[in-house]
Length: 186
Image (cartoon, rainbow, N blue to C red; front, side):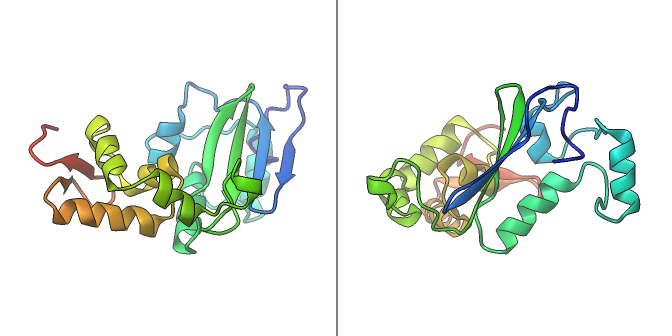
């Protein structure tokens, strides 16, 4: 938060801690016309908003490589079996939400107690995944997880079901490819 904050914006950096998630908010948008999609894909040129601070953090060994944080954080959460963090540009700032566990309590659930596994069975199924892939060709597991707010294993189960039924197929390289409806054009 220290490195990425827009210090010319008078707003405060905010950390909100809930039972099932933590939200980090920093004043200032992404800058340089960068979008969240580019940020998550890793296809962008990194720039340091606060060069002296970022250089100091790099020399201290806190920053490994400029522009690699989002991917490293997301990978770490997924490898640990957690939901991928969500990233949003809101109110002239940037918010990152991390969830405490894969069965995180959904906001607005019955008395705050509906867990994610129950909710995803009720609200999302392989038909919803198929429809989303149909409308968004080339989508990958990470984007499906973030869109439907379900664990990686749930998405993989539905993708496997759709692949077994020959409804969708994977195209492209393992790291950069995605899913398409069978017979559709790229």
